[in-house]
Image (cartoon, rainbow, N blue to C red; front, side):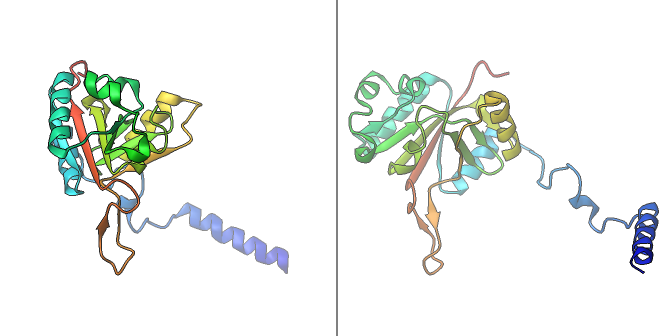
Length: 214
C-alpha cells in the first residue's frame, strides 16, 4: 500500500514537470533589478539621497579644495578637537589640524574624520569596514562624523559595493562591514523620530573629484 502511494506521488511529480505551472509573478524572478536604473549622474543621485536622510554633502573639485572647505567648516562649527586615525585622510586636513588630531581622544573630540570603502548612490549610504585604519568605533562614537571619499568610490547599488569589497580583499574579508545611512535615528519611543541616539547627530560627506577616474 505504501509502495503504491509512493508511485502515485512520483507519477504526479513527473507529470507536473512535463507541464510546469506558470510563475504567477514573472517579473519578481531572475536577476533583473527591482529598482529603477540610474537616470542622472551618480554624484547627483548620491547627493540627493544622502541629503534627503539629513546628511550634509559637499563636492570638492580637488584635494586642495577639500582642505579649504573642511577648515571653513571647522571655523563655522567651532570645532577645536578633531579625531582622525587614517594617515591618507590626515594628510588632507591641513598641517595644523593633522598635527593636533588624535590628541583629544575619541571620547573628547568634536568630530571624527574617516575615509570609506564606497558610497552607495541608490540608498545614500556610506560603506565602511574594519579593515580601515579608523577601525570599528571612529565613525560611531563621535558626535559628528565627517567622511572623505572620491568619485571613484561611488557605486550605484549595495550589490556593487559588496562585490567591490570581495574583489579588494579576496579571501581576507573584513570582520565588519558597515552601511551608514545618514545620522543615527530611532522611532522606538512613542513612534517619534529622534536623531542622534545610537551614533553621530550629524554626518558630513566631502566628495572629492578623482582626476584619475575615467
